[in-house]
Image (cartoon, rainbow, N blue to C red; front, side, top):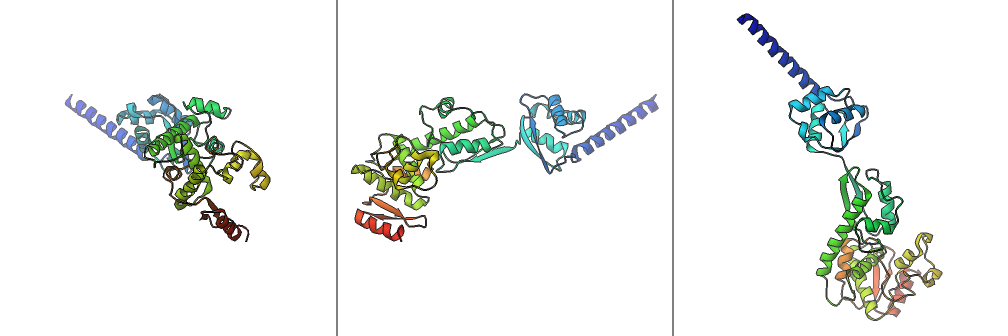
Length: 330
């Protein structure tokens, strides 16, 4: 009897050792993925059996039961997370299990650039494959309602930055994040603004910031540009800034601004209308917002591009005309 028990014990031990060795071999052997990397998606609220079957259907594993056994033995069954994942060619079942356990999902990203319009923002979202499209057929006003915005016009109300997100995040969620970021940063900057500024509220400061953003790409000039526009507003002079005219022309703008464009009246033509335009004309970055709220004190009323991305500033029209001849008409 004792000999029989010993034999059974030895047989059980050998069996467990064999099963253990086989399972270890399965766990560390690279999966046979054809491409260099593969995107997989695990649906929300999936149990272990469902996850294993999804891996089979996506060509990651050949059958589900060995993966299920491995997950149960390692006590990972309750901690597997849904999401999108990128699998490298040499990934093995153990590393795959750890990835699902820790939620190492594939992140998407989108860079919103200073000076771009809301139309360009919508186009970029539509071209980003990691973003789930939900606003394709919605108007701007419908989008603003969905994100809970109080403003009607969306222009300038989204903060330019690089946003990271899980693949499959909807465009409306990303717009909400960008909208909230702009409000947070604008409100903070508004509270710390310089005194004696001509703005009635932070929205008018945002309009000015968008103009500053479009007028120069040189960071050091932004406070000076803002100072010139502040001086013009103070004496009742029209802003006379080309970017607002171009924005008013819209999709018909062909890249060249002409004399007739400067005289054609639109709500955004600051050559024909006094004060600020009705809305921002682009997404201003934080530097442009700070410049609009902390303009440089100057007597300058004019500036002209020097052809190298910088500007020269003048206090009077005579000096300005000389600068135009020197830098623009030469």
